[in-house]
Image (tube, rainbow, N blue to C red; front, side, top):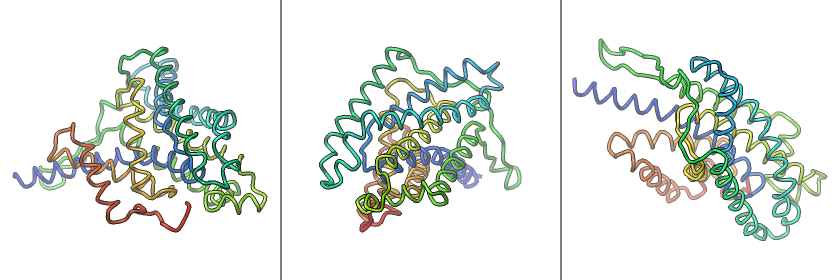
Length: 318
């Protein structure tokens, strides 16, 4: 009996880790795409996600007739915000980031990083304090029936081992996988995707081949923010947030990007998935406050054994 209880607990946290990890993977994939193609260190990525959370909350409050229908409407709002944030990302690059990235700094690889750090940290502060002024400091979340409902799997062995699948987390994981798969298809099956990969691999050669580096970077930043917007709305359906929530998530994003391999889009998703699994498995032996400790122990172990990350190649730019 005690053995079956332990197996049930292990399977339950593993399932929860996979569902949460898919959502982390989507966040990491958005940041990984930006860094892999643009080599921009974007510390404002988590704050853009926080902004999407608040916009999603207000969109659902405006459109949802009740909690029972809030989750489907939230997913519709997430798709709409993905389009909005693509435009926001393109505009942010056009007005700000192009001055510290792109063809201007290709000759000296490190020359733009100081400017990128200062610019994105400034954006982060503007978004955080702007949200604090507009929305207040009270934690919020998108109330919905799916977050309070679960499917039951089992019993799997006799009348033992029953697993519970939270509906909001399940559908958020499904949407995350679909969004990442769709982006991967764009990168591998379309002309703009091939240009983005060419820029990621060798921007100087891509420039000589006639590829518009600035446009490629603008598209990459837009797609990265669009993925982050979807992740933000999905997360807001079951996770309380406030104006400084983005800082917590940007740490997870960068850890996932480095774990998966710098510049690897699929690797970034895998890194986020691994973080979710480790974070949940750690609850079996550690208190919730020490979950991130376990994550960074694994992070350091992976980097010691494979410095280029799980799917990265040390000889490649992306």
